[in-house]
Length: 614
Ligand code: ADP
Ligand code: MG
Image 1 (cartoon, rainbow, N blue to C red):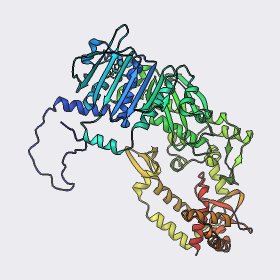
Image 2: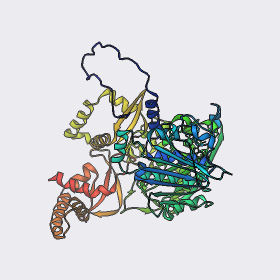
Image 3: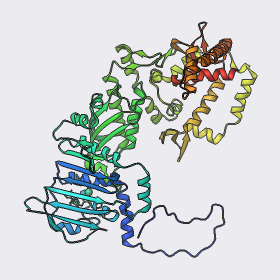
Image 4: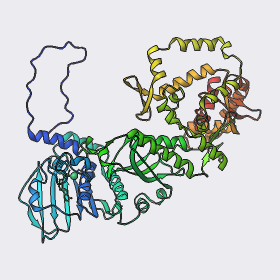
């Protein structure tokens, strides 16, 4: 029998009158169906099968584990170890559901040290693939080989030659789950995921040597030796260029009212550059994921370091076993534990202070109330002095404000916006005093003199939706769902908010309200208009290669420069966009306090400004 996972029950069309029908008969599912459904949960994809097999090998005390994969794991997954092997007498029930050597009573779960305990992994694989086990235990002259289908042996175990330990082969994974096989085949190969997984195991278990290769390949993609130090194994697996940029970190807490744990690990420094976070997390020896922790560390990075780089994190956390619930997920991937929030906060603090104390040569962007420097063109090297003042004033990181005092308006918007360290100095100081200072500095001239602007303000005010307004005003920022959506909580409701759209609207309203009253940020070096415009024009038509367009571009750039020069006074007065006599851009408006715009877009901004003026 085949299961089509995409099958959904027929539903009445929305809005149609519900008709009275005979209730359908409830039947007991066939056991084979139940098992296959359950199996699909434990073994979600080839990489999850590999994880279970490797964990079994680790539980068996192996010091050498090798993985061979064919066709992304769909054709073949083979994991061989030199562990203690499986007793001949246990082979008949080895692949039955809920047979395990690791757990006897429910209470054991509280102190379980092994990776497995549910006795489901091997069984699951036999329901969705063909499993063959070859094993030999200590003192035996020969080993045994036996194949399994749907939890049972296909034949008596056959004596065979074997090397110490166990080899488990899973062939034709998901052969009987059409939909899953198709999705996996269409999606990219699972092999990179498997390599990634083995890499993670390899750097944690430095006393175990790992290899991982594609079937038929002569070279392994992961290959480690035992007894290397943690940093050495990171070097071997991830390369010297990453290992070089890592700093050791550790922290602990022993206050039972908060959290009890020990953490040690390695985190990347300010020189490390990556688009995606690599977070390798072990909790009580278990490779797991903990999204809140990952997110908190990312926030610490983006709030502390100038580059918007994502970190590389290796962390091992030890908790009292009774504080961890490893049983929350069928694949045991996500764990939950007591006092999670407190632990996350403590680790976040540790990461933050490590980042700040470790590096006094990194580049800082500075932004004070009177001047701002923030781009490639205007980066300033920090000195020890301003570094320590930053360090001191960063006691209350901005992300904490979001969480701890949700009524504080400062917490609301910059949680959505990328934290640029340029704005960091400001955030650190007392926000209220910063605001006051800004207000005082503002040109006292009333922008609302202009009726057209007044009208726009009125239009905004008249469109205020009281319900939405209250949500935005009193919401709690939960986290980013992806690049454009954030989760907000308001009372008992959770909202998904398109941050891009909200930011645009916010910026628009800010511009209208500050019209003629903008606070300005000063560029540390005047930026020549003509060059900026040329840059923008070049960016616009990337595909045209030749230089023949250069003259043409130059003409347009010159025209636009003239235009902006003509409007310079107006731009300065109303928008605080200041252009000096030498045709340089020197000042830009602060549209949103504490937010530093991305200076890469300045050329494009000027170009559109020119278009708008025409
Ligand atoms: P669990 O790991 O939760 O006990 P599994 O289905 O993964 O359940 O494995 C069932 C049992 O098979 C394990 O408890 C263990 O005794 C045995 N086993 C599985 N793989 C190996 C291995 N590589 N070496 C030795 N024993 C193994
Ligand atoms: Mg297991």
